[in-house]
Image (cartoon, rainbow, N blue to C red; front, top):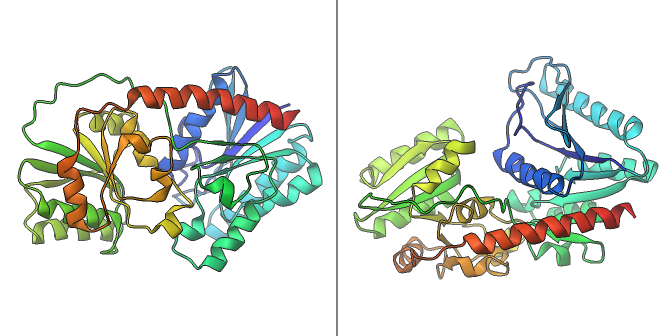
Length: 371
């Protein structure tokens, strides 16, 4: 049996200049390393479309004795590049994947039909990794969300991102739950000599006024000068320009700094310099039930206490005891939760336990599917 893991993965390089999805790559990297820690080999099929709109040949990369990466090729113009991506996936499913092989598919909304269709033909083992419902994340109607969920049914097993999804999608098939990367990032308590309590927000910078980043910034209006907020975010140029302007217009420049978009070691090292982190999620439970904010695990894995809005996917998880919750998504309520936060908590031992349990559970899942 061979394992093929399909997803938008650029942790070990990006030779074809793909558009990058850091959250996807980081989560896949953790799962890849969890599989390898059980001495199981796999091939990661690195999907993507080129940012430069150029033709790129497919490329192979042997990472180590257990991991190979295959980067799909790209073509000029988006429509041709997308069709070429479909063609390459079909070619792999038809001619490289055997009936006894296992595929792990990081759920992508516009690719799932290929894996469901060719599973019927080739009868390979299919594990779907569900990190979110895209229709829910995009705020679509219940009917559209239902149709996406219906497409996710019928796999042999699942890797779910929260404890709510099994009851929404499929709980009669084998599954494991993984909220994010549980690997501890060389944790060492730091002597943080800065005078202010340094808060960090990492994630999307949206243009909408009713979004996570604006809740974070507006909460700072209710905090005194002993608090500072560092924003590590990504978004469109317009969204970044707008939030910077908003900070200036509200006289918050001395307490809030946009630090840019960091990734890898730069991201982790920055988090380590902070006192605590925030997850100001404005998405309602009706929609948040289909996801889990990956930033929360990044925060916890470096030992940071976390303040979050009271979303059910976190409150009904194994890390709920490590997170302090506001009463609502109102900026004043969120700032009150920040003021009450106990900075002396240490989540490291819990994350280490989750890591050990996941490695065992994932190995068992792979063995069950292949048997």
